[in-house]
Length: 116
Length: 114
Image (cartoon, rainbow over all chains, first blue to last red):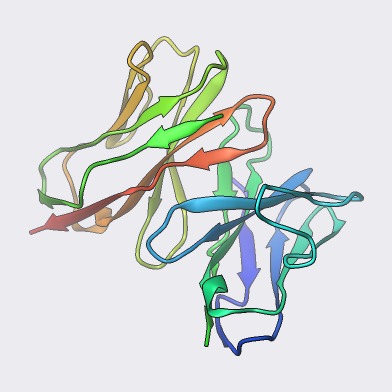
């Protein structure tokens, strides 16, 4: 399984500010996925990030609000822009396990954001 | 579109007993995978078990087993010999092959009591 590190693990942010979450993987992976989990809810896919190309966003998520970088095969960032209290969530980075053919995803510890 | 349904309310389970978590899914695609994840209060998502749509046998992984009934489109998770550390949210998920998206159900809350 892949080891995924996310930073920050948690943060308290002011309305209107932006925060960048970092995701580091211990192996090279083609695709990285960013999920959001609002309080008491399930996980929702925000976007898929491939190295060397623009991220692919799911319905309801836009690049201006959630810009993503993928500079290499082991690292990605997600920025939550112009935050409002509705953005208070856990944001999770995930990747497919290297060598796996079953398609399960492994997740980072998550970044728990609270917007005041 | 993929749809995962988990409708059970929160469950209290006596330590050392077994618990079954229900999951039904809906897809028209014949090739897919089903997954269960555990999310303790710390927030991390822990992969537990996988079942492929073409697998003939039910998946097992230690104390976890998956009761796969393809015709009914159900993939229930069975946790045997519950431990206090099993207290968590449990999410059922599905991935249609050829699609990157892993779709999650709403989750089941399990509390194991001594």
